[in-house]
Image (cartoon, rainbow, N blue to C red; front, top):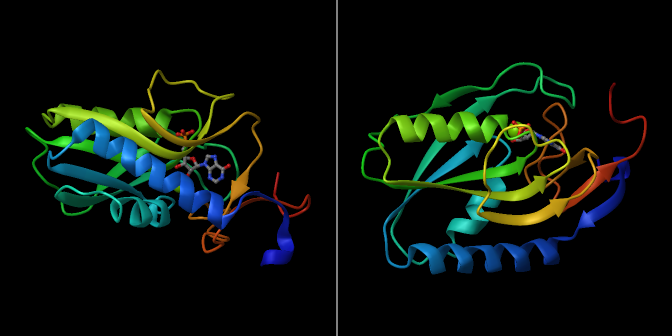
Length: 180
Ligand code: IMP
Ligand code: MG
């Protein structure tokens, strides 16, 4: 698996440090308030697990799935949102935790669901942000790292066709590993 990686973008140590900083930012904004953390599966599982461990307040964790990518590297249809164990969003302070925000369509759809449910506040926390292909008007209040280009990255939860999520760092794949 590791032989497929051409270059490491963010090492495990860099990630650990940045996740701690992000968690401190989150705590700074919400203070002691209870928080509902929405983990967008599958990509955000690793990031969310690390992030919530650094949060000091009471946290409820809700899992959702947003399906917009098939086995390729570009969105194939509008995201469909599934909430596992649906909850009443009303009056909650909700933090959506994403692996990466690219076009923003997924985040926009999620914010729509949570807002329609009557949440008191909704903010987004993304481990990575790709700004070059942003199409939806969404704000990522807490962002780990910004990717300037549109390269496809894997690791730390991010996959290509279900693979590479278990890499402890974020890397770029060798040419030939990415299908057209
Ligand atoms: P958006 O709706 O275009 O913002 O897409 C966000 C979703 O696309 C993320 O949750 C990822 O699952 C996926 N995605 C976008 N770019 C990448 C990438 O470089 N590597 C892996 N997954 C990606
Ligand atoms: Mg994903």
